[in-house]
Structure formats: structure tokens, C-alpha cells
Amino acid sequence: MTLTVETSWRSQFPMLMANPGVAYLDSAATAQKPQAVLDAVMAYLTSENANAARGTYPWANRTTARIASARAAVKSFLGAPDKSDVYFVSGTTEGLRAIALDWLVPMLSDGDEIVVPFADHNANVVPWLEAVEQLRRQGIRVVVRPMPYDSAHDYDVARLPIGPRTRLIAATHVHHVYGNDMNVARLRAAAGPDIPICLDAAQSFGHMPISVTGLDVDFVVFSGHKAMALPGIGAVWAANRRGPVFTPGGWSGSPNTAGIVSLHAAMDWLSSVGLERISAYVVSLGARLTSGLAGLRSYEVLGCQSSLEAGSTVQRRHGIVTFRHREIGSNDLGFILASDGLLVRADGHCQGSGGEETSSVRVSLHVYNTPQEVDRLLAVLTSLD
Ligand code: PMP
Image 1 (cartoon, rainbow, N blue to C red):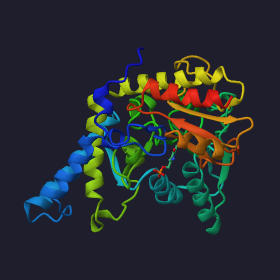
Image 2: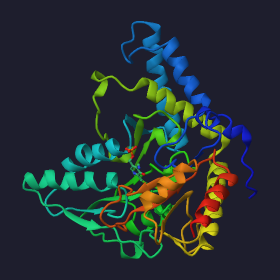
Image 3: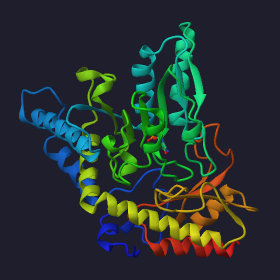
Image 4: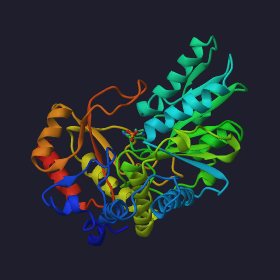
């Protein structure tokens, strides 16, 4: 595909327009916000701000209706059936924790097993261990089976440690360090139809089309702030077959109404650009960077070396490229790049104990990044080669 960024996309991000010398290459940490999201939040807060479900006056009714329509929008964004559930939470970490402690814990009994992806983000490791620890204190022993990985850092489904007592497989859609678009469909095929799969979609939601029916997963959890919404809002989607997950405050707690409005506006904006287009564009930008890095001797790229399309033996890398310089420490490299206006994530990446426990530099790209920014980064990296 041709790598022409549509200037109409980039120009909709006030933060980027206000800082023309800066290349923001840290979208996996958090994404910049388009004007449409900021406008939607401002319009809501200045025209009908009220608490939800307190419906004796129009603002409150409209706020309640906005939450219902945002919930419906999440389902449609995920290709989910109407008969499924969306719970708004503060983000992926809270969502995964809620599934682990509120849904999973009461379901487990002595001798049950769960599969935990130890090389994934800590947010998708720690809550499952917390659940196991809580049960241990009740005298219930749950066996933790580590998720096996192959040489491309994808799940090694041939060695998936499942059995009749497996009660959950925790998985990630796009890896936050290696950028792999993990082969979740193969995971389901290996697991069979009955074992619940919980998907951490923090790095895929808003970056590529997600179809919960296509992937046949049971839970999808994501953070709005990585998908151009405000910080402090995210959601858990749950398949109807898994029953109610939890009631975060129920209707006695106050929802993050402005956050929910921002999430709805962000999904609308992303849909207007088109998730297929976003995905293809981001993959090509990442490929431009990996092929540039491949020509430099001083750098070691973590994860798969290729951005081949799904269906090949090597997983597609999805706009996240993490690397190390053989002599310059990653923190130092981060500072050098920042002094050139190239904003990356440096050092550790909240990776679970199964990951490559080293400091590195992560470049993560979104639809507002340009091939010129990648080339600018490559020029500085080349000067340090
Ligand atoms: N999972 C993955 C794969 C992530 O990349 C992140 C954020 N770095 C999280 C979970 C946690 O997201 P949040 O901090 O928004 O809860």
C-alpha cells in the first residue's frame, strides 16, 4: 500500500498540530485525541452534564441514554451480538482484575486449572495470580499453567496445556512489546469450543477490526485512552454464555459519563477513518521501520523480524517495534531521541516474568504518524550505528 498519510487525519489532532517538530511515537502507551473527541466531551459537559439513571429531568435522561448508546456502539464496534454485555470500567487493568476476582474466583474449585500468559503485560498476569492467591487462602488450590510461546513470540498452540479441568485461558490480542498480532483464532481451535478465553485487547482495540464472533472469545477488555478516548474509561465485553460478570458499583455508583462520551466519539472517529485502513497503514509504517533497522548493525529488534500478513508462519507485527542498541543503554537512547523530538517509550515495559527481561526502546505507531517521521527516526538511529 502507498504510505501517504492523509493530512486530513493528522490535522485533526490538536496536540500534534501544536507541536509540529515532535514525532509522537508512543501510542501504545496512550494515543493522542482527535478534535472530534475533545468537541464531544466539551459539548456534553457544557450542555447536558448530569449523573445517569437519576431520571427526573432531561439532562439526566439524556446522560442515561448516552450511556446506553455508547454500550450499543461498543458491541457494534466489536461485531458482538446484542445479547451480550458491556461493562464500563476504568481501563484494561481494572477490567481484567474484575474478571479474575469477581467472575473467575467464585467459579473455581480445588484442582481447577488456568492458563496464564507470563510473557504478556503484567495487567494480564497479576490479576490471575491474585485470584489464585485469594482461593488459596480459602483452602482451594488452583493450578497455574504457563502459556507456551513459539520462537516468533506467538502462542505455541500445539503445546497448549489444557485438560478437562481448564477453566480459563488468558490471552492477548496484540503484544505490547513484540507487536505480534497473536493468533487467537488458532488458540480457540486448539482449546475447543468450551474453555473461556479472555482477551486483553489493549493494543488492538481501535487499531484493527475486532470481531468477537470471528475470534470466538468470551471476554474482551480494553482501555479507551489507547484508542483516542479520555483516560479513565475502558470496557469489558462479555459473551452472553458466560452470564453476568460483575456490577462495578452497579447503579448506586456514578459512571464516568464524560469518559463514556469520549469513548463513543473515539469509536465514531476511528470508524469514519476505517479500521481496515488504520490497520493496513500502521502495519506498513511498522514494516518501514523494521526494514530500516534490519540494515543497521547496532540494533537488535525484539520479537519477529517480519511483518508478513497473517496466514504466514510468522506473525504480522502490528505497528509496535521494540529494539535495543548493542552499546547504548535504552534509557540513554530514549533521551537522545527525545532531544530530537522523537518521543518513544524507553526502558522496561511492564512485561510479565516470561518476557525478555531487558530494557529496550519501543516505537508504537498510529494513524497520525507519517513515513517521514519513521525516516527521521531511522536517520537518528543510523547516526548512532
Ligand atoms: N495490556 C496491554 C497489552 C497493555 O499494553 C496495557 C497498557 N500498557 C495494559 C494491558 C494496561 O492498560 P491500562 O494501563 O490502560 O489499564
